Length: 446
Image (cartoon, rainbow, N blue to C red):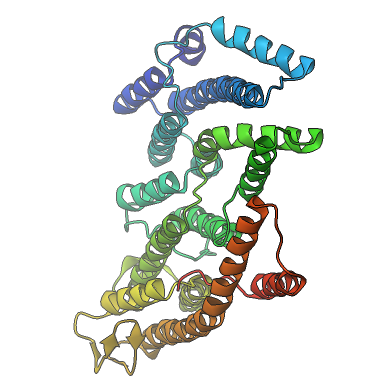
């Protein structure tokens, strides 16, 4: 078998992708599926080895920094820590050089994984088209579980929407449509289902990530606190207690590895980037749903003609539910406004009249198309206005509380540096403000 020979002689993931693409050009699709999985195993091996090297480097750097800090206060590392530092130093010094094809970068490993995924999807669709095998569902599931970067998942979804057609070639695939067609004879049914799952899963994950992001404190707040305490003790020629010193050492290593880990797992800590990605997925889903709805409403379209009326009405209902569901997921008023504009433009090249668009305010709309589409625009606009009102109320409540809390925290920090403390009344006020502030919901988009 060609795959087994390639596995023995070719180690570079990029070279494996080139071989796979060559086979694609020569219409040999099935072997590409095995070659793609082999390339991913190679990438995972390089990625894990890179993380291991970075971990050793970070641990050595932290121990060297701790040793240098202790020298300043006439102290030394414990025998156990010093032995570990010497072991790491020797391991790093005698480390063999990496292979020439090893990028040594988690972002590049992620890009190589994207290339493998795109090659596999291309092969799966073409193999199905020629009726060799049908692995599209399996490959899509494999790709979406292995491609961790949400930007890359979005690229995959967009590429499928632009590039692939169903088996019968009767219509372009409305990828990411939130619909599960029930008639088994329809050859483009699976494309709808699998593509929807890509965007649905991505939206759910992004929504969870947005919820988990902390907007009021540094993700490594404990590290900053321990470092400040370490500095205060060092000024008195003292060192941290053993447990706190161990925790500080652990956090410093994690901090140095954070970028590598985030790149490997496809994590994004920036709230604005996550929010923009959520909007991109939402637009792709809803645009396809709207286009598909147009086809269903056109009695001359092949999609509508291929469905019985009962199935067509059921499918339209699912599309409507998808658009309503996406509205519930979006919380940024600017994005709600953009979605309302998009829905309006997809159904109207002058079909919506008497509209007033003032910043993010949508008022009375008259639609020559169905009342359902007009109601979507109104519903998105109404939620947009409601969210703005809530955010404004939160801002007015949070702003003075945050200002007073910040002032007291800064005052307490300054006093501690001078070996003094807040008064009992100030300390009680600080604790009360902290409780009130923690009870307030996050004001993400104000």
